[in-house]
Amino acid sequence: MKTYLKRWFIDGMSYLALGLFSSLIIGLIIETIGTQLKPYFDTSLFITIGQMAKTYTGAAVGVSVAYGLGASPLVIFSSAVTGMYGYELGGAAGTYIVALVTSEVGRLYSGRTKVDILLTPLLTLIIGAVVAKLIGPFIAKLMTGLGDFITFSTDQQPLLMGILVSAVFGLTLSSPISSAALALMLGIEGTAAAAATIGCCCHMIGFAVTSYGDNGIQGVIANGIGTSKIQIPNYLRNPFILVPPVIASIITAPIMTLLWPMKNVAAGAGMGTSGFVGQIMTIRTMGTSIETWLQILVFHFILPAVISYIVYRLMKNAHIIKPGDQQIMTGERT
Image 1 (spheres, one colour):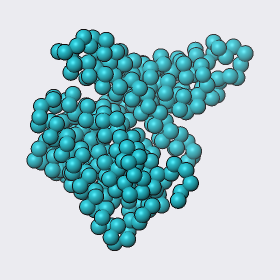
Image 2 (image 1 turned 90 degrees about the vertical axis):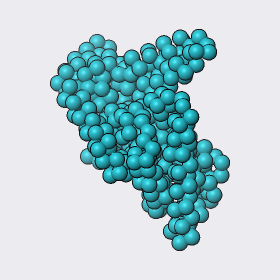
Image 3 (image 1 turned 180 degrees about the horizontal axis):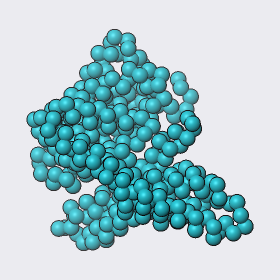
Image 4 (image 1 turned 135 degrees about the horizontal axis):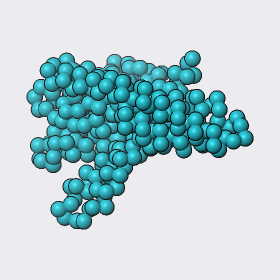
């Protein structure tokens, strides 16, 4: 059972995030760049590519999840079609469920007969379509309802929900589960999405700053622009290294929600500073004003770095966090 839980909720969601990044997220980035540069250059190709990438998100996600779950080639290729249908009816979560079911059920028939080239895509398309039709609308309503509830609650209770959303998404980013996939499945928007972005930024920038002594500039880049997931082996040894970024997230987000509100969309909510997607999506949502740039600087970089470092120094002086506790495993641990 443990193996299946890992496959379905860790491996599957990780490849769901890869599919989303390769289509929807990168498409939004390209379209945003094209739109911003349109007054100065002919960027119609950028805008077209971005729109196409968004259009075929379901196919990319279906294929990526099936591949990640080790489905046979014919199931993977058929998942481009079933993924599109699942996305149409149930969004990213719908595609995920369809790809998960067809990948697992496909093990029972794929490669079992001499007419596999006909039987496997036939059964995969039928099973995928039935699952999408039966489950897709329910999944869409469930995820949309949860996302709307989180968004509404954050607007009504900015202090409490700012803390909760930021902490949850920050910890999710630093866990084996994909925070990007979670945000897109829930479809959170507005201030809630901005709080989620801050939580993710606090973990990435926080670890970038606090691990500098152990990893140098390569650690700043790996944690701050890559992902804080590289710290998973380290916090399993010493969970206290999570404390600085967590405290940073529960302090920074409510300052934003209460005093200087920001907005974002789901595509940027779970990315933090990874590839600067969170910042690009913030600009896409709020515009390119000086105020937006200042808010990004303060809430995505300065406060996460300063608060995390202060807490880190206090814990280091108390010998709770020690040198080497955050060293990235690039080879033998020294």
